[in-house]
Length: 470
Figure (tube, rainbow, N blue to C red):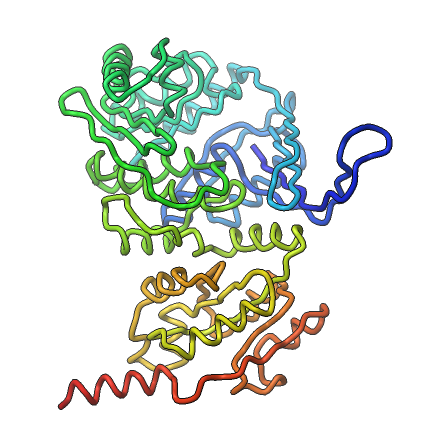
């Protein structure tokens, strides 16, 4: 399915009816449903194939382009009798005003079902894990399709992880793992779940009835519970952070869980990583996949306990940054951008960032990757790796977003984000600021921030080396 976002302002009520007048400023599109699952996997470094159905229309073609751009192998059968499922969200000042759904949720035809099973049979020998992402839109409700996929995977001992929908779990029978939320578990169990003891009873009952090896229940603010029938349940606490949007969190859980299990990690450890990943994506606006750098940074600061600070959501990939910056702009906020290596964070850096934030409403920091720093500063730099540098920046209250970039200059980032202000230290001349000409081409402004004297990473590094040699 295609997720479409219309970004804009609401400034008055219509004289025709008591409804807000929405003035559209821009539009963006993202792969939703199972598409978001595969984008999570691709961003985490997986080779991934997606199989499914689309319509012969512009939304379907948009999905194919997105998958091709992400190097995802897509085999989407074109059904000329249905349209591609589309969800259009109207967003003003970071809040959804309305969602318009266009969908046809009939089961697929027998010829399409048989062709899909054939595609699964051809692809599965090269797989380490299989995900059935069930959104209740007809495909996996097709009689016998899910069971055929589970049987094909079972013959090769390939784990099948299912993100479920609805109360008919017969189609999930004999799956390796199902990942419902509490409400979905209550629906299939048939009773309310009021406490942990009741939760465990429900999990045991459902696993026994449908012959499941594992069950992972996501519990919102309460975290997760994972168990198999041979062991005691494991309760995993939630990741403590601000929640902006829960869209796509289930996609991130099932994709991260499948990745970890496919790589050989045991289910309890895989669930802890998936819990951590979910905590990252709920800190983003809209349906946005996780990326490998975000997950590595959180793992570095939290280990596998799933407990981390409230700042990892600030570390964004390019597409996620573009969406968030667009939302800030639509809310009328002024975007300030600065960039650098920020190696061995010192008072001079803090001074620059604090004064840069004072120039606008949101401060976005472009951070040179380790490879980029080595090309610019030499083979002995950076002193701190990119994950450490990003984590330190994310802990600062002045910084709203960090984007890691591989190029030697931030020119492409500036073109993509179109900030209102580019802030640099006053040791630069305005005409020497990289990206300045891009900014000025659309009416942006370069601002130079006074520098603190006697602070530099090179000087600090040399002092440390001198002290160590004494």
